[in-house]
Image (cartoon, rainbow, N blue to C red; front, side, top):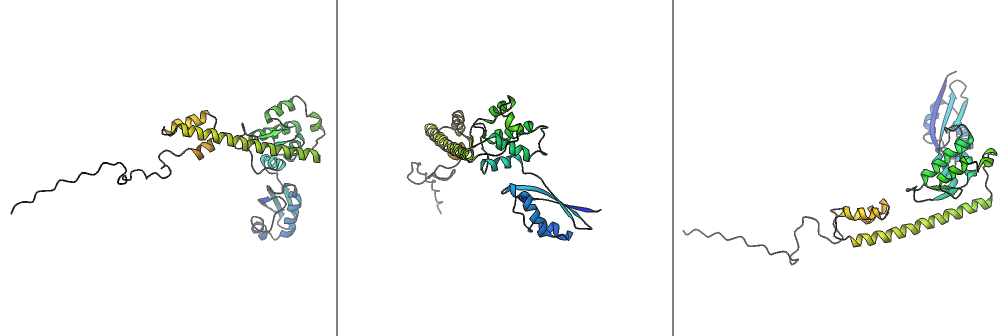
Length: 265
């Protein structure tokens, strides 16, 4: 039995006959609409995420088999936390909080794609990913939650494979996310105030010295790049480097070239 395989990335629950699927399936003589409908049925849980799929088609009977992969753990975590992206400074800035039930849910979804042998080990892998994204787990930094998991604090939830949250728990998570966003905004305003004061204090000094002082004060790199002018760049209103000074701007008047004496005829 000869089979042909088509592999592609599609948006969960929203696959269409357009590229990448249509052009690959068309030459195989299969019912594209039927395959697309089946893919969407199987990937609806991954709505908004890119999902790897594999379609095996029997060249003779046109029968097909669809295998669904899972998005990266980071994508599943962002979905659970209702985030567009993780933290750019995971060690210092937390952007969301998720509960152990959500971690278990993700671990089960990634069951065949993680290294851990037991569900508990898979849960720890997901928590480790949360740590690199600046996401709290059970209201704590992921590193602390990992210690709690090791100590058996969540053994019952893991044993029962609990993945559902109550309405109250979901509302609490949204409130926590809002507080974290407000805290980030407050810290950014504080950093900006300190940075501007340092830059004003260091006026006229080499950029390297000013930058060193900003780094020492803990100002984020992105803010330093935004607020500290690049060395050699003209300050607002300044004349471009190398241009002649304007008349009357304190420049010494140019000396007249000595006139050559005319030769007497």
